Amino acid sequence: MIIPMSAEEHSAHRDRRIPAAERVAEGVWTLPLRNHPGHMSFTFSYLVEDAEGGVHVIDPGWDLDENLEAIRAALARTGRRGRGPASIIVTHLHPDHMGLAERLRSGHGSPVVLHRWDEEAQRESAHWLADAGRVRADLVAWGVPSERLEEVLGYVTGTPRVVIPADLHLEDGDLLPVPGRRLRAVHTPGHTPGHLCLLEEDQRLLFTGDHLLPVVTPGVGAAGHSAENPLRLYLDNLLTVRAYDDCQSLPGHEFRYRGIAARAAGIAARHLRRTVEVEAVLAVDPGATTWAVASRLSWSRGWAGLTRHYLVSALRQTAMHADLVRSGAHLDALEAWGRPPVGPRPLGT
Image 1 (cartoon, helix red, strand yellow):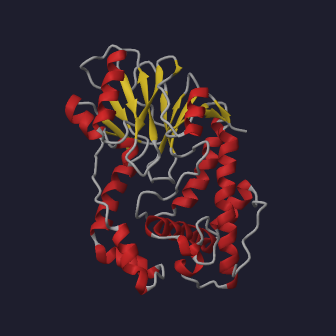
Image 2: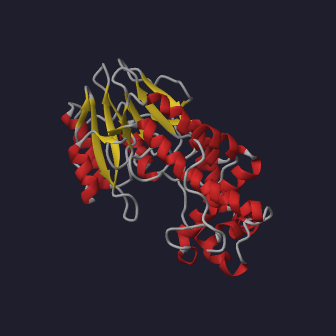
């Protein structure tokens, strides 16, 4: 069961507006920041005060002037007028979470803290997208028909990527350099390779970034090219966060809540329903390409309605699920979470 922790945030989510900032716990505040059009309307940035008067910013949000001013104004309210964050802690590499990191660092000298895998993923993704021949070969291997190839290729390679390096790399279990607080890194790859949740041990707060959201099911493998199957990693790490069910979840979007274990189980079931659907297709046609499998799955927009980024996302999802089934790793996931009650969509419908 999901229990919202803020009536203001819950109603703002329902009304599709940006909520007001709130105090979460002693020395911890929310700071909702506006996103670029076409994305979720806002991202939660969080301010965490340390024992020496420093304020650390978790996920500084999209690189917009109004967000920079909002962060500076919030820091001024804590007594740090004219001074920047003590550090910039990033849960993962996406621009709605780390976009302002470079401007805050260059403007105030604030160090950027990130898992090393997400720094590496930024570079790998940039190299992959810059190599049109490599991207084309991957799309051909997916079975994308020649008449759709340019459409898909144009979307995949159309967005330039900026690499923001870290001043400090975190590993799973590391304590962050936040004086007076036990703020621990929990590595939860899946959404991105280096995605981090952050556990505030004393007040039992879990900053979950985009690993768990209370309503929307987070995307998996949302960092471009990846050497490992992000879906397998994600399902494994949904099991990891069940241990923090006593914590309040402070997500990157929507609203704060309790019910981490229930939400992890719900998200796992949603993904595994798709896995079971893919399993049924491959049982009939083991050699089917990613395109062929995807065309036989149920999509909310309908297969014919998938274009641009929706089509690319559908193909990526299908490839991950197919790899999970072909490797047999889905059997471990089904054993851990249980086979979902909703069976596969009948083939050919």
